[in-house]
Length: 154
Image 1 (spheres, rainbow, N blue to C red):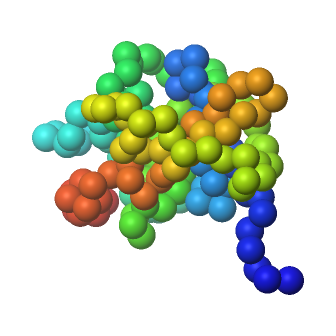
Image 2 (tube, rainbow, N blue to C red; image 1 turned 45 degrees about the horizontal axis):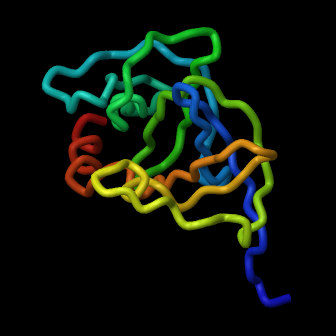
């Protein structure tokens, strides 16, 4: 065996009507939204922080990060708890739908759009059945300066 990865498992989640995915190995846990403490002067896409079993975790609203219309929490809203540059972060998503296994060969380059989110935050796109899934590049969601700012919040 050569150790080449032929497929990855991704957790699919919704933002508005679109389907996104994150490598399941990057996710520590998926939880319901918690009581937030709002932080003064935090970037607009930072909802606040939560206390998760004694750890202070900044919460990023992906809708705001991607300049989508905001929405209040519903019964299906979830927080993806993961690590970005060594910092635990919660990502607010509309709904976590499923975990799928994607053959690496089926992942296509993201569409090249000028000025668009696709180029900045996507690893690629793939199909789940006949639905297009956008694979997020977690490490590009936040800039180095934003990660440092989050560390100081926590």
